[in-house]
Length: 176
Image (cartoon, rainbow, N blue to C red):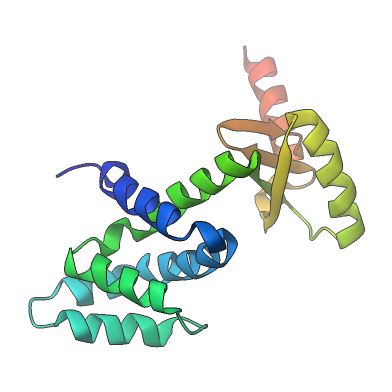
């Protein structure tokens, strides 16, 4: 079977071209569909030969929080008919990458042991934009394992200033 990225690429590119007038709106409903499609039980249900495409569509469109626009409904029907529901999370990732490439931005995930308030996040965001030399779309995830500090992931670059990382560095230095 082909790798999911290979399967997802044509869907992401076609959706990106077709929805050029509303990239951000499309990204919102596509991310929501991807989150729903990432559920293993849902995929098992949809893959059942006893479940029709229309039943799968009704279930998924009923689970999403916001009403899908007509383009979203058509896209979901297409993905279900072609048995590519499992590729939907990767389609969403590749769509975001295309969006970011067009706008010259990048997604940044900030992992922190503690919640970050809005003003601190704004300061951190401007500092990170200077560090990575591009505009960033920053999101925050909590990870208590970090103990303190933050870990920032931008594409394939990682900036880890967490206490956990420093302890690991000290551990390796002491055991070497």
